[in-house]
Image (tube, rainbow, N blue to C red; front, side, top):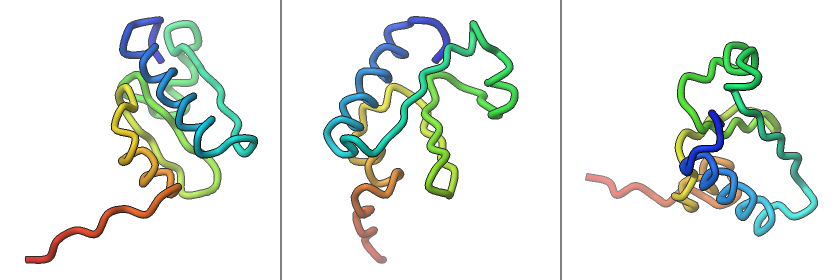
Length: 88
């Protein structure tokens, strides 16, 4: 996150809800304010905030925004299967 903006607060609330609902007891969540600790943004190549970074299990994934699109976040975290894309 980058300061306590409304968008950052929504992202925090949304990711906590996702974790508590779908990963209870199986996650570690660290919230870092890149205004207070900018080295983390540089090291993690964070170019937008808020950003959720999933490190383990691999592959590394990054999600940008307020994390309100729960289905997309769950699919990206591989908690649920991605919906099949229609073929043309």
